[in-house]
Image (cartoon, rainbow, N blue to C red; front, side):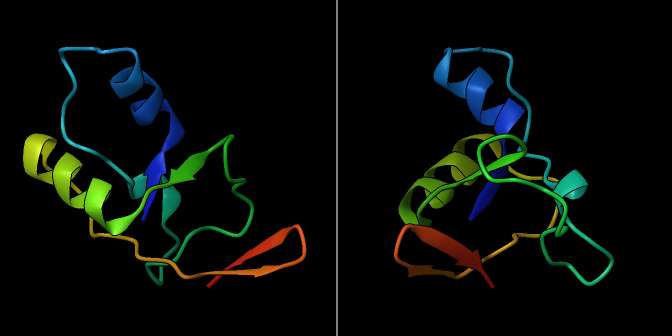
Length: 79
């Protein structure tokens, strides 16, 4: 699951005033990750277990953007 990088950074720093995860800026009109976004810079991928834990604790204000990652050599492809 993708999560906005800025939200994850605050979480890792122990920011106690985190609100819900808001991935609206990541989604295009079809509910997929915008093609111009870059992993690490704009979003990070978390596994299903961590996504469940984070959304249970903090909630989320946008639809879940589930992606599948395919790897070829050192390259990742998001679907």
